[in-house]
Length: 354
Image 1 (tube, rainbow, N blue to C red):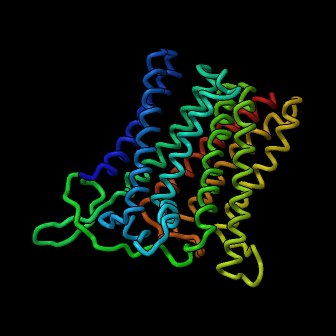
Image 2 (tube, one colour):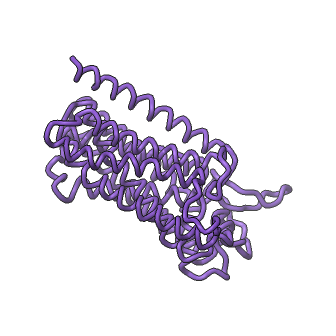
Image 3 (spheres, rainbow, N blue to C red):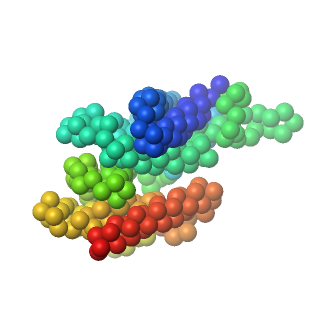
């Protein structure tokens, strides 16, 4: 039985359920919906963690019956490269991203000064938005499962299944291993740092959306520190990526060449920097519109950077594939995020003008 595939499905179902019950709690103010949402959120965090640990174990043992393991791990790789294979492909990196959001959201709710906001509409809306984003990432993993496995079909031969967890796995003797360009010590650091930064952007975005809906200025208490975290990790990620590119690709003795994916990760860094400056004035009653605008825009640009990387529409050393169903889902998600954010921002702008 393919337990990893089942864990991915359970993670998606629990994330979606947590989002739905969170919405019901906001609409009805009934505490039982809030409790159900929190239980499902914890279940999601547990299943995502187990799924990630399971995938790491398969990568370490080079269980090439799984297509992801076959494509990114091999017995000739050192153990740290086998672990790094977790983020060498789009499925594994998406799993890491979803896991990071679930962990960060738990930290926001149960630790630090933001713990005092638990149970408020501001926190409920922040939770719901963050869980909705996690659900989309997990949907992408359902569509292209990191535990897709090879099995034998009678009279047909070996096939790959993305949906059936009950097949008997076909024993593949070896894995083809990691892309030679990725066999570099920076591989162990650059991608996870970048994805942790991307995950941290979720909280300022969700808090800003909550503020735009209910106009609660305490949103900066949630957004401030996590935007700093996002900015720090994105800064480190971009910098480490520059060193890696200089070392492996040369790029004419430059650390930067305006590669499409590289550039798309720089743009949210610029808007995040602007937010951190604007927020210092927002505490004095200034930039009440600009601060949430920058928080929202930063996350939308992160999703745009993801689309640039995963859609295959731009030629880049970072691109993974041609345009596919996953690219379409990300494009739809980007349009929905942008459209809903524009509506909320426009409403706030005209309210402030009155």
